[in-house]
Image (cartoon, rainbow, N blue to C red; front, side):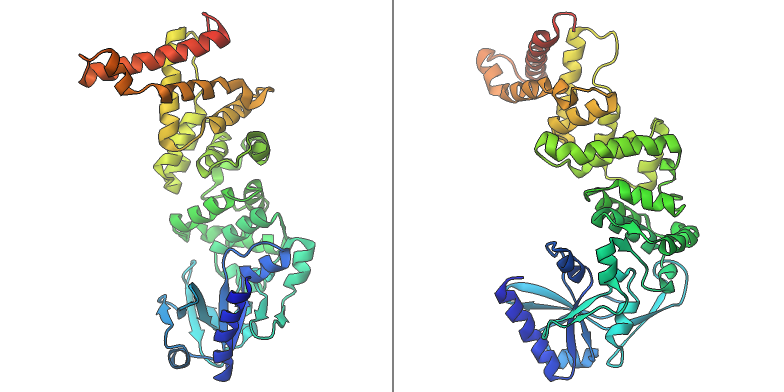
Length: 402
């Protein structure tokens, strides 16, 4: 945190303290600070206050959220989110079945106990930098373990997917008792909205070790209902092999794989197209992701195609890749992995030459050479030139017989 930001926060905390409250940094920001990671989100908890005091002491803050008050406060070019300390108690089924209580009497310890994992249940006083760790989160960070704060963990089914995602994000293991609580929650996973589940899945794919997401769910017998397609042993082994290749992609390609590419690798582990389609439908996967996965499930060529037909296929494939946001390098890397090509992505490196040449073929150049062409005839002429260029590159690489 920069010095200016720290001064602004302490200024806010000082106003709160003068009115009898305390302001704490809580949640993932504290966890990441202990791990030496840059903080993506900073959450703050105010103890000893209620909504009336907030309005009086911080009149520039405005409330957001319906179930409990969170306040946004703009200061020094930044917007801070401040939440009143609160208690939760189970009042129904599912992720939203909670009654929330907040007020001046709610303590910091009571606020932290409602959190899912001990590594997320630590706090730092903004004014004094005093650290609070009532549930042993720091020890669990050192042991690289995810452990539930309390038995209340088993009251919220979304915590199953959150814990699996943190396993991938932090490269931590799930403590056995917590895994057992995840297993007990499996029957409630169907109550979660697909959007919530997909959000955790997407976040897991963006981590360094997305396989840990699936492994944590598998260990807890919680792949069903949303990820049941990956439960078969053969499928899971394919998934392990494919995601191991994902882990090397940044080094091999000098660039990380996109979300679309990582999702496509996950889907490649499903041997049957109908299983891949059903998973996309169930999870309401974005259209671009589905297109990318479909392209990567298909070999570039089918057998017994002529050189001209192969060139046409290459031009079409490059066009589709560009539309769905996949790079040629990503496509080459993943197809090489899927086909078990020892040479790796460089076996498809010639596609880069084709793509570069296709970008250089412009309609105005074709029109300059053939002024009479227009409309569909011009489009066909441009396509013919592109196919001819692709044929030339492929002939140099493969010979006339392809």
